[in-house]
Image (tube, rainbow, N blue to C red; front, side, top):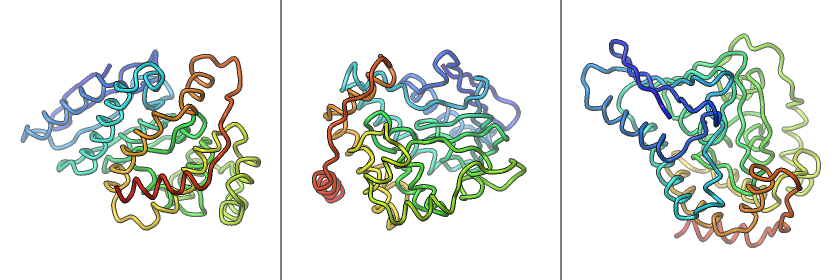
Length: 284
């Protein structure tokens, strides 16, 4: 699932599940954590480097099939994933991620908690959770609201994918020679400032889950005032427990990942319920 190599003072952790586009399962997460134990305890290791052996993909995210197969196993996966994110953020040695292609969801939770990210022109980024009835997690409710031109709101609320040029323009990655951007950033900034969640869904993500989009909207507002991604990761676990009881998540994973033969039958978005639920989880 992962390969580990040491070259001098560099410990290389290579995501090695190409048949699943490096979707993270519990075994992989625990193996990465064990490798970090090794690196932290070895004075001869100065740098931990993450990369992928999957052509054009760093990681497609978490292995979400477990969301509909075993709720307890799903919660264990997510809890371990967020703990790994937390550990990477606090890790005392240098860390680096090399991304030559697509990174989504749980892969973002690994790469974007390293201290250095190296990308190529093939870089593509997405937090696609609203498309399956989940929410933008791995602490991104802290990072995304801080992107320029409301691009973080766009990414969180639509689940759409952006390339390297647009990612650099909004501050997600460092500037580089990535070519021209594909998005009308000025229109996005105006729309995500002035339009309602329903209007945004109609224009940008008609296939997304209404409840998930409403949660993403509330998370972006909440995240603007937070001082650390650790707060976001703590809230993510509480939200994940709540989402795992929601029929929309089973519906989304079944229709978008497992079956793919029909469109999801989403429940209507409930603004009051979402706002009150998020408020109670933050205070709880």
